[in-house]
Amino acid sequence: MAESARTFWKGHLRLALVSIPVRLVAAEKAESDIRFHQLDRASKQRIRYLKVAPGKGEVKKEDIVLGYEVEPGNYLFMEDEELDALKLSSRHTVELTQFVDADEIEPLYFSRPYYVLPDGEVAEEGYRVLRDALWAKHKVGVGQLTLRGREHLVALFPTGDGQGLALDTLRYASELKDASDIFSGIGREKPRADMVQMAEDLIDRRSEPFDAGRFRNHYAEALRDLVKAKLGRGETVPVEEQVEPGAKVLDFMEALKRSVAASESPPEPPKKGPARKTAKAAGPKGPKTAKAPARRRA
Image 1 (tube, rainbow, N blue to C red):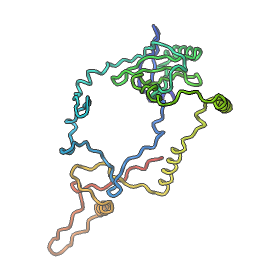
Image 2 (tube, one colour):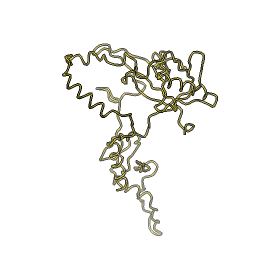
Image 3 (spheres, rainbow, N blue to C red):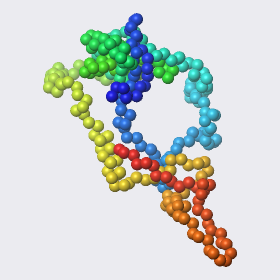
Image 4 (tube, helix red, strand yellow):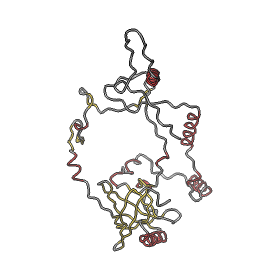
């Protein structure tokens, strides 16, 4: 399984003079969410979004520039070359610069998880040594990693069962709002001691080891069941995925009729009398008919 997992990044974990070749694989499941597209009920086509400017209409891609609003109505143009010059050169090393207690990093900082695997048999021994040392000390390694030209703060820690290592990108302190400002309106007077004691007793009675497997995403399950039910009833609808610029949008039934007409063999011309012109079926230059996409499994 580990060998077939798609590699997101390859490089080294570096601790002082020790360097361990590793690779990252995504910890999140890509298929965990059911994604929707917006469709036009009448024409059975995908809805596309155009980039437009008031009074001008659609703007060509080459005419679009990024802008930073310095004050209402005033912007600084940011050219692609200027932004590319800021990108950091690719570094394939995670330098572990400090270690902190496992519970010292607030959950607010954690952003996106990855699994860390040793890259090759030679790397496995050093990998296991670092994993077991972090596990024994209940520590998390903190460092920085460059991905796509940007530098990310990361935390390295053993997985819950101690079998492997995981890496989570962290938010920088500047990316989080000041909690003291957010909660400044909450009173500071102490609640009644007996009420706090009751809450503590309730927490104690319901305290147990965390098991994520006990919790289900009921909405996602119901959504998948709905998709399966609609597939079982044959409710799939052919949708035109691409429309050539300037092409006439056909009514769905009209498109089907033209498709059937084009597939029928033309009648034999009469043997006697003057030749009569017959209407040609829509050919390669005519409007394209809607093609049904392959049925997707839920």
